[in-house]
Image: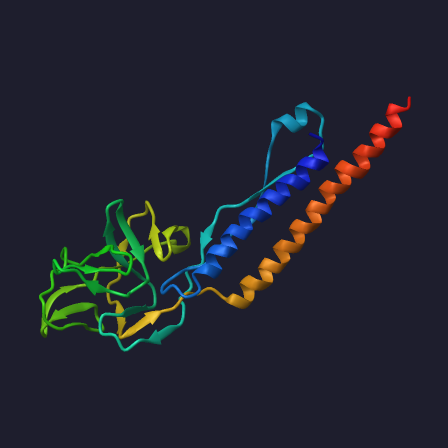
Length: 238
């Protein structure tokens, strides 16, 4: 494949990857605690280009980074909805291991465990939090009360580089970094942190990516149908 063709095709593939990222962000505008992602572009060296004396650049997406900025906190009036003010994540346990989230839509299982909206078990500072069958509430410091008695405290943790967290699904995040506890977390009860996705920004970015893809698509068509066609027609007559 000629170098010019490869430049355009790799650029188109990069734009398709960008569309997947933008689609995920837009689909989760209404997901509590969801964090948008940012990416850049990078050039990937291909020794085969030099070997074939082709002038080409392989364009690819750079590493994805989480946009860890806080979303707006909105009241819900539900006692077991909690939002973290400032830095920090809820630590939760899943079958795949420890995970982290800012989605504080909590509920109680029939076994008396606190879980998140996606079923992950909420961690406590001193271990699992077991609640009774009575009324539940959460204090501003993260203490969980059952029938007015403290039964545990939410484990709120933070990371040196929260942007390096990797999305597993929705607002559920993972990392190999060891978290550190937030010394004095501030919890707003009866509220949820909303997604930090800006619909206006994403639609504008979506439009730019779509136009860029169409331009590259046209470039491939010109290279294949016009340039190559003329070359074949010219040299075929000799």
